[in-house]
Length: 209
Image 1 (tube, helix red, strand yellow):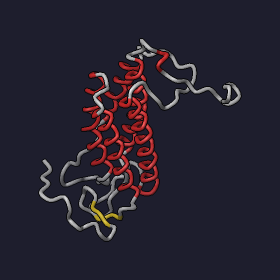
Image 2 (cartoon, one colour):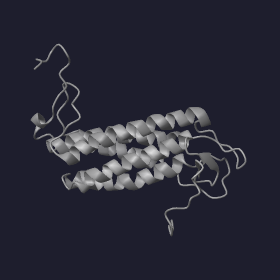
Image 3 (tube, rainbow, N blue to C red):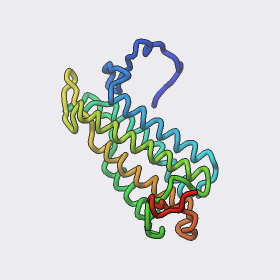
């Protein structure tokens, strides 16, 4: 359990921070950027939940996701090591499988899309899930950049740490899909109000004001 006794430490005033394995990294390091983007996405989900406008089944899923996003951040901030002294916190395939089950559970009752939908919704809470979706997509892109720089699924040693876990990045990919589906579910009340979704009308097909 984490024990936080003081929030400010002054240790990062020179642009450095520490990863979860206690190694020093610049705050501009793409691994730091990746788990920072995950934290930002988690905060957007918190705003959606705070609205009090989401259906309880959706809110229940999001509360689980918020906890798992902390796990994703810990995973991204811990370089892979072949024989770690302590087993680090990692995202497991079972968490990804659960995201996919939720995608099916909430997505199957929804009407088929005839076009892309505009990032709006019937409530502020649901609209915030669009913001969360785009934030997760950005976190995924940064995580891939970090993997390109530090390696993907490459285990190192304590002296020469390895790269990024592909499972953590995969989790972000599936989560963005789920957030899109949850936005639709929250907006349309599981498909009973398809007119609640505003479809994209391509240029040339819409009348201009």
